[in-house]
Length: 344
Ligand SMILES: Nc1ncnc2c1ncn2[C@@H]1O[C@H](COP(=O)(O)OP(=O)(O)OP(=O)(O)O)[C@@H](O)[C@H]1O
Ligand SMILES: [Mg+2]
Image (tube, rainbow, N blue to C red):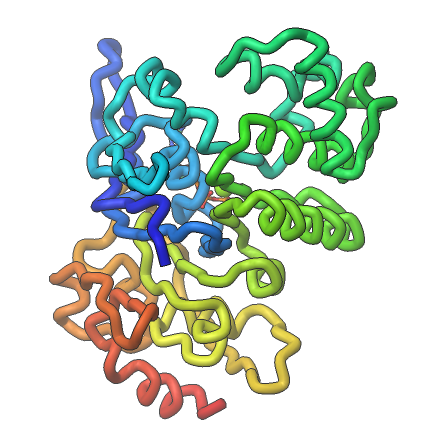
């Protein structure tokens, strides 16, 4: 599989300022050293509890936020040659000039707040195209109609305002806007969470259809494991600013190794005959990302914590092809979990 994006020790800390001079007194360690490869044509699911840093990773990859440190390598095909650019530090102007800006797009959870309510739909969709290239207004209009058709809307919707649409239709418009610049990669940040179940299914099917048609690569952010199981080919699990486990979707459901992944899966009913969830109830709250625990971030809630876990940060290591886990006890967790909570 060819890589499209490589995150290397990616860090995003938000400064906390205080005092009359607004000096930085601390920081929120929202993303705290992430290594992750995203492959061409895949849909990578990113899951984890609220506040673990999913949106921050997403916004940093598409450079809506500047990373604090680390690298983001973007692999771009130039004829038969692959050109790799570290986009973590290049200026927004250079990003635009190198034509990478339009290749990375994002769809947000709430289509109501991600659109200017005073803009006509044709301008909402035209905005990213106009920012990147010069096109005649006739050409632009026919392209917008084509985009509306692709997402199941029509030219009659061109001259309407966002409030004149249902939530599902607004999310279709957001998808049309995201694919307007012919991107390679789209982050979908909880794109269906604000929608009711039947509309969720329509949007998921639309996203799948567009992915196949345009060979798109997705990062699908959600806390809904059933949704991610349906749409993703691979899943990365995040906890307090770090990736704790990543594996092909089926493998993650068959053989979750990290205690946190096990707890996540046990909390959600999964209609899978081969999978019987065990109730693994975690004690305590998620620690604050302002002052995360030293060593393993999960050590304060892990039922199997050992001395080493509170002292040393575990590295993400491959335990079988394509399956990586960041846990000092990775080789024993399956037995430990079976002994404590019963086997599946
Ligand atoms: N602009 C910001 N300034 C300061 N702190 C921020 C900012 N954006 C996010 N944070 C903090 O960073 C941490 C991670 O937030 P983020 O939105 O990435 O989480 P998330 O995993 O997307 O959560 P959710 O599932 O609720 O959307 C949180 O503690 C949040 O309060
Ligand atoms: Mg979020």
